[in-house]
Length: 240
View 1 (cartoon, rainbow, N blue to C red):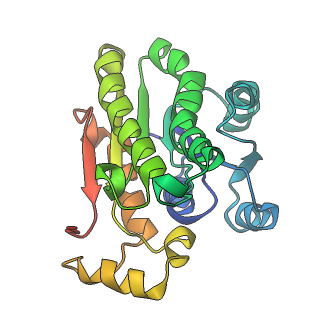
View 2: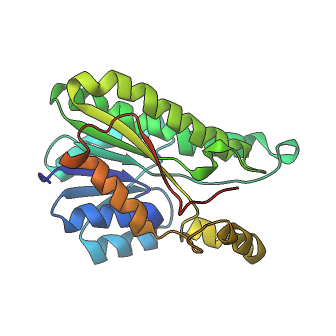
């Protein structure tokens, strides 16, 4: 793959970390965004040599104001954007707070608009761009996740709509819908729930962050230049 300038949101942990590392190891210039856990992010930067940037991707102005610093670090315009940042605040709707609704919608969905808007014009003008959004198997709905499922379903709709806009400028937009993956978020689930979820995966295990990252790497490469508007499930065959 031609060496590119890559930006990964939520890029220092879990799937984002694996994705940042995959591109970096292949010789691409990578910047990783994070918003919490300074110690972990600084350790990540020290271990990998990948520069990190701290700001809230749920805030449009912060995204807009930080993109120039990222471009300076990368040595030019962002060519590949992986929108991975996401959180979960689960709860039955009749008990869910408005604050937790907004927190998940803003962090998981609005961040995709915020960061894409910050780079899309330059991608179009340079006649190249790859936008890869991380959705979820639970975009189809899961008990206690109205906020999370709504956000992830919104990402998939955003992906398909943007694919229609960018194609003439060689800017593709695709999404990956991971199943349950061995990340900090999944590790917080009760063991009984985790055991039940794994029992529904024909492969009999959680996914690995590196397995999701490898699909992102494929979508960014020349071999996927005709893939546009796709939502690719990477879930081990998981069925509810």
